Length: 607
Image (cartoon, rainbow, N blue to C red; front, side, top):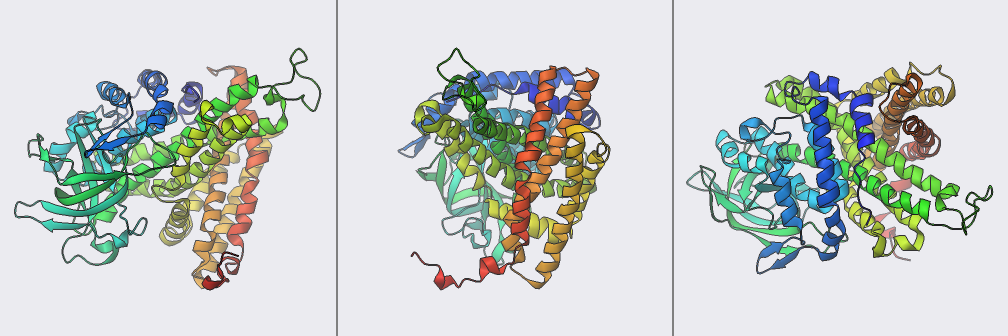
């Protein structure tokens, strides 16, 4: 397993130079403490935790997995001690309100930390990661009493949280939820039902687990309009926040999975468990999307994390492993053969990994600025500003989640490919990265679900294409200052202008077709999402190339000339070798619906 090294040089380049986070933080009401010195100290501290504590547990956690015996779930050796160190460092409360024991810093700082943790050990990171969405949901929709009872210990990390949506008969189609919530005389509810695939659903890391659960009230409307949201703790919580007896929720089994073995994915049985409603009756799904959007951005980070870790494993191997001679002649004549890195196809794979990791990181960090503004608007009591930023981030979210997880999986597979046969065996840990990455395209909504959300809901239904016009306007604003530049920067800028126009035209064509053909959105959506992702990443790479060129030219950068040159060259690679894939997705998105839908269902047969 690669020993993770936090990519602090690249992170600082994005934070300080490309995206100018210092100026961004200066405009936030909770950004005063996020000085460059404070941010750097947080990055260094998180890097130490990830490199020295979490990374060494990644392979062993995969090998041991979690255990269920006599109703008690045990995490892999070392996880409990690592979690205690995480809590002692105050890492969970980094971006949560000081009134509940947090440090009150912007949300983006938590994301920077989470990316490092995820690359070091994704299975471990999911335990505190699920808690973030739980906290955000309670913060926004919980009553004052619920906040007082739950938030201090959730924010400190003493307790963890989950979200409980999926049931045996339904995954994405939450209209089929059957879990019941019976009102009780004391104002609580008795929750009964079964939830499956619950990440971090039960474990020994914390003394209590707070489940956010979708359930139906008696007589509730059918479908999604009749779903309410409840907070259901593993152990009953008194009004003063103290713990009582074990609640009526138990782990029925642990799922046997392809990857993320160190995380307990549980089947949870609720048997009259005590719960309390959050949000309004029958409006639970709306509140749950606060949790879901948090989780989806977190899953997008998983794509970046696995691309980074796989690259960190593949690069040293490509420099050390020797095989054949370079086609252009011997590069290392004193050795029995040249290193793999001299072969063009190996460089193609390494550059693809690097472009995905660094381009994806730039996309996520750019979106995090919007999330900062959104959560800041909540804290400042500005609902209109919150709605604006929520809609803006809503456009990014399915692209980040769907595209970056698909690309992260590709990068993980390429890491195995660089190793050849050695990548397929467990000794080097590359196959674990691919196994762990595979789930990212499935949970929190599959790629197909993200695509339907993007094209059907965000682009066509909600905004009639305005969200695309707004983003492509930002693309043009960046590109127009460089379209007449000579060399690679000018070429990339002109390409981005072309893509901005093309994206809008494609959107308009699909919009017009969908008015006549009800299957158009479903048939086009994944290709549309992937096209959008490739173009959005191109924008992120032009941002980096512009800043790297500027710093290289004026000599004012804090990194070496080689660092900036590599940035520009990776951007060139992306535009030349990866962005052209968007053309195939465009053609696929605009292809006739009949190609997908004309075959009769009974003609789908195993030959």
